[in-house]
Image (spheres, rainbow, N blue to C red):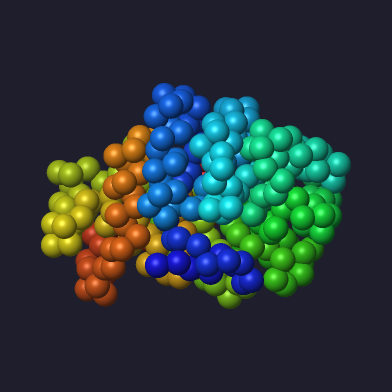
Length: 280
């Protein structure tokens, strides 16, 4: 099932493909995995200039050769490049590495020292020129989002990309509700955690396996279905191997019952609201 990306964006699949550290994997295997993901409908491909100092974008360019129009392509500018002129230069470097004429969405990777007014002015200029079709932010907590909305005005911020997995659900307290009120898509990065997926021997892991068995699915598919249960939320698990991509894609057709969602919520609870937004 596809969801609308932000207030005025296109309908895209709720599961996409992340590429953090993909340059460390076997290159041919990573390219095959990305292409297989497109075959299976994982059209949202996420990268950043930071990833492998641009090598991730170069690998993606090879994977998307001849298939650019199938893809919702996202990249990010580093905070230390996010001045008005620096944002433009960073975007143009990313476009060259990706061998494309436009990004579907361009994000500020996290808050830095440059005023949001500068970065957002650059985003708007790039959008007016067709070099980006939308823009957003990443790792923004509610206070940051309030400031961003004051600067940008309503309807401009397409996305907030944030850390979200079964053992790190902090964004459910305030970030997701804020984004839903303001028509901003939420993209979950590292949806399996960094070596923090519920172990199969734990109560949560056993529950995931039990629910997975009733659906003929995998525990990770159940996790992705749970995380993207709200129409505002997308997930971009990284997969540099074809079998992992195929497993991720299986979550696209998985629907959990309200009872199953409640059981996962109880076994792997949201926890108290943190003082600051978790991020990697």
